[in-house]
Amino acid sequence: MIKYIKYIYIFKFKKKILKLVWIIVAKFYLQNNSKNVIEIIKKNRKHLAKQVDLISLDEYSKNNYGIPKKNYHLINKPINNNLINIDLIVYILKNMNLTKINYLEIGASVLKTFMTINNSVSNINQTAYDINPLMKKYDKNFEDNSLIYFQGDVLNSVDTSEFNKINTYMFDFVFSDALHAKTAVEKEFESIIKNNLNDNFIIYYDDLKLGGKNNTVEEAVKIIYKKLNSENKNTSLYTFWIYGWLGQYEDMHKNAIITNIDIESILEKENIRLPFFKKIKNHN
Image (cartoon, rainbow, N blue to C red; front, top):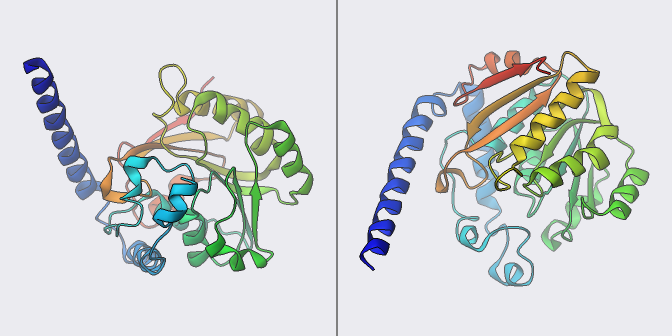
């Protein structure tokens, strides 16, 4: 019993220390934003505040949309003005210098990221791929041809084949946020992403550390990068840490971007500094 109490005490103490570390990291990296980035953050927070409940308790009890029970009470809480991955994605999309962007989000869940992008980025066609049905509150939004929702399982070959038959876009930006495990991410790439990428592309991966021993998202990302790099030597892999869609209510995640676009110049334009930013290029 004493050992158990000591374990709980030490565990909670370590969690508090880690949270403090991320607060300090955020203050150093994610709060010193330019005027343009601050405007993006403000617009995104205003949009999220208007959503009230992203998913009600009644809806959640019937279908959790991939949101762990421990996170449900956090999903609707207001997020502070630290840069989160949604803000970063919006910023990159707005600075890709394309007349029209084709965007694919795999694992759109309750559409928190997807609809924030829809609110903030104008020159964009958006496609969501998710195993869950479209939430009824967004039915009317998808009457517009620029928004497409495909319900399917990324591990089901019938579903992925059907998606490839009806999809008419070559995607400039792909956000992968579905099944967080090596085997699933590799399968997703082979069946959905690989043959639907535009000549110039960005693939964004969230939470690289999930998946368990020898099965993390990060392992899959490295394999995918090597495959793409073997075909296009200008392809680079970037890793960094940033808050996810729950903002300050959880620790930062390790994220990754695989791209053959000069992402560094896009970030430098507004002096965006990402924690522990690292570039890997032409690594075989």
